[in-house]
Image (cartoon, rainbow, N blue to C red; front, side, top):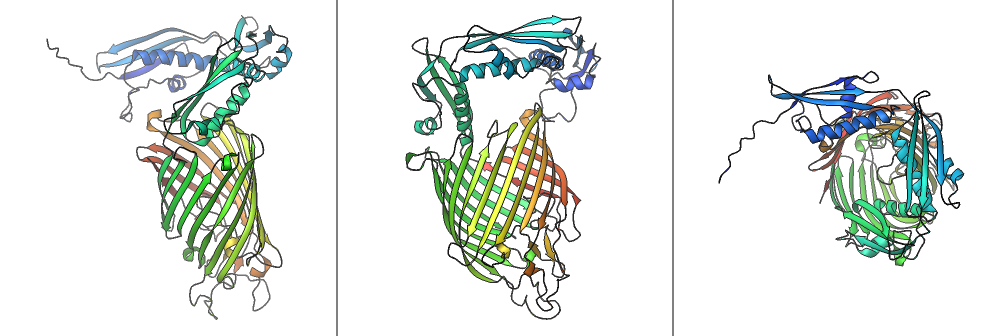
Length: 609
């Protein structure tokens, strides 16, 4: 028997119409729904095809939308789909009853166990009397109480919220009933899903062990530790009942993801500079958690070859150690009429201070060479910058330093809450030919104002000063622009010689950034995210000897070193393309000095294997 099937064309959605809505417009409600009206530009999307199951999901999304905005009594009275004979597409009509807007009334916590103090638990709730009613805050309160009970060792608690609405006062009274079992201990820990990563690599990141009392906060921190490794696409930690009522089995389920990365990047500036880089990174070498990086970069500005190796658990202890080898050449003739080359290596060690802070130390030995073009420093009109001509030569830099890092982010990969900060200092002069102290600090803060809307604020500053009478050489100064300050070319801002247009960098900089990550404007399958940014900052403050004309002893009017404010704003587009992540930056400079160099476009790509 043969069945011949004619599927016919796909049926679209001609229109989505709402009846009974007063607080929100039709367009607002359409944005909530996954189902979309058919349009020519949705060529690659299937969300504009008629699907009854998707419409059922959309009704639940509408209910969440309203109940998260105070409409406790919201109901969908009907949802009707009619096939229009003229164009063969469906028209969807949703009739709603919004009801009144409610606030939270009395909030109570009731518990059967005196060791879980109800008054204390109530203080932890993210809900207060008089707040606008939001259904998601009920779930957040349940999560908070569950977390608090788990931190006290009670793994299997049941928290049932009960509601009592008062239509006369438009309030909803909520009582959280906490029922808990006895204190629970970890019977065993199962690790599954690790097809490549060694079991020991996962277990060493866990902050609980077999036989320990179950502690939900330590379990959550263990999950963050595993996510921070970057080895896994997803990490789940679940507890089930063990061999006895007071025993628990912890199941750690991981989903491996590619940890090797073949990266290719390119960038353009307004003066047609071009950079291409190629790198191979393996963050989980041989499944042992070791990090190996080999990278090469070619371009009109920078050529670099370097190799890095990091052992995250040196000698079996909670100490990260590694070494670096590198050769770098900066051809800055386009920006500052000199060529900088550096060859060397170093060792580094990182110690965790606690669950939130790390302290790292390092030592580097390198040979730095500054090459000035032949004839650049000739006498007479058209001679080179006096701030550059005494920089030529090769110098040994022997330096030691440290970095203190503190992170209180809620998620190490995609933070939506919390902050992080670091302080870095390097001391050059442990032998060698140069002497300076370089200090840099930065801080970041994240806050999710709505789902998929995240505001981040970053600030960074640095200062370098010589000691033993030494000035700061040009290769040890700060240069900002390009990737470090969008809207400006590499070395495009800061002190400059007006005669030669050479960039001279600065001994000091301060930069602040505000960025808003926006929700997806296109379907999730496109993998496109957008953010708006604004960068503001300054750089400058050369040593006095570089600001003075050596012939006259007076201030050189051709060298400008103003700590003037620079600012730029724009949009960044992140695309998870088939060939890997791609980022586009479009910038508009809002404040600059006349001698600064600007750019408007930059992009970079990478490919995983």
